[in-house]
Image 1 (cartoon, rainbow, N blue to C red):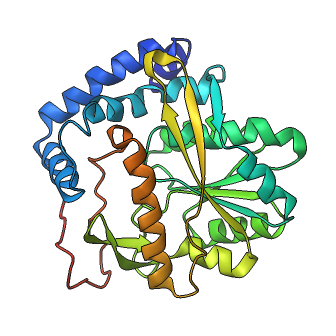
Image 2 (cartoon, rainbow, N blue to C red):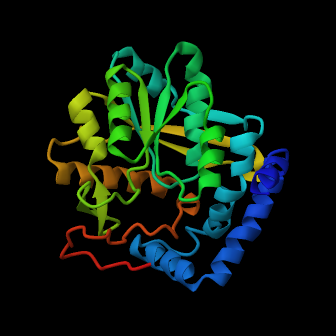
Image 3 (cartoon, helix red, strand yellow):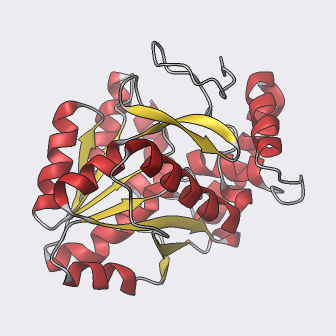
Length: 287
């Protein structure tokens, strides 16, 4: 039934899906006090006004509503901002690590790169957290099975896959603001409050010498498609895990502030992973 629904929705224009997503976003906001409270508190923590995040509730719903088109439909229109940064990184012969927060459409960034660079025999491997439901695991796996796009689960085997890709001069993409399991992160400030932050990006760079770029996919108005933005990493990543985590969080903040209305403010960024060490500056997020 879900697959049939996805198949039917995949034929719809983005403008229609985004309209449905707007309704879905506001419905979730209205019906879930937990989600609504976290959304408001995270915006306040970032020091932003309601006007600055106007539209963020609708954008969160569009993140879900556009998936059938992205996974099963024809390719969405994409324009590029500073794509020459990728080309320059490739000229070094090293692997390339691409970092994106939960901002805009992070699904389309990997697809756009795969479509552009697969003909050059340059693949991208993306880190993903396997879905808990078996039917969704199959759907996601089949939807992401396309030329130039590979996946690596959040396991030791997945880390080895990413290392191998980077050492071969390929690209790897991940969301460093995703809360890692215990033992795989450190506490680092994110908009002024400690958040458990993955150390994986720094470890990948240390072991492979890969270049690092920031990337995010802006959702264009009226269903016109997406703009994939590339930005340089402001500083060379430190060898110290805690320092590197602070650098990455600061870089993610800069990206988010480019378009705060497209960040997933309802994401539980400050949650305390089970059995992870506590930070004296962190307030436990039980949601």
